Image (cartoon, rainbow, N blue to C red; front, side, top):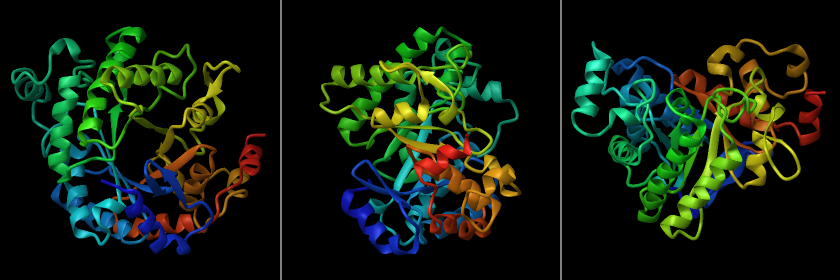
Length: 362
């Protein structure tokens, strides 16, 4: 598990190589503001080897955040993260490892008949009640998340994950009302509060694609204040003094800046954006899709690129995400060793200050 001394020791080892605010507070310690994502890529041995080499290089050169999920690349991403943790120089206490549960994962490779696989591996074994499914592939029932967390710990080869996300809970809105989804999230949080108390999880969060950056009338909308309240209730029911909800993950980049621009979340002072509310609630924000899954690596709008520091479009795109008020870490997919040096070097440039970032939107 990442610790205060471990992450600060990592920062002291690498901090002089980077620009202002490259390392930022999270949990008991600090994290790099550039993190490794592991979503893209085919579920093949060759992709595993490329990921392993990239992850080791990142961990050995100033990145101490790794983000994955049990369903990424048919569980291969979690397994290769585990290999990289063992093969890299930093010790476990220096690295923040995040994973997610919610989507039913394949195992190693996509099955010929996905429906039959889900029925045999999850329904007939009792891991999933069909009534809890949304879109035939998503479940946030407590017993299912418990089982998936155990499997993730095995895949990663660790005793504790630092951050465990409920993955895309807005998927459940396809099958049930918003109120029922909040109820199910509260039940999921209650289970995770128990795992926090047991030491299996450092903290938990909610990873979303649309839920927190769309307006309230959107069919995928979830209220971040309501989610925070449900976590508070779950912690109280579990008898935990501190709420285990630590973070949210959402897309944020030059082309998808809704988390900053859309005031969708009610507060006593009026509606707030997801980034603004998360900051006020004390939640860390991990920005996914920082370079839009590679689309922003080629070019950025000229008027925005001119305001950002970096030698390449990818570096400037990463630094846009790192500059957003309230963002703790910008996650970037790094499935190849040759991408690592460029992405790590983004952190050698200072991010925009708050006024300069605001000016981009004027």
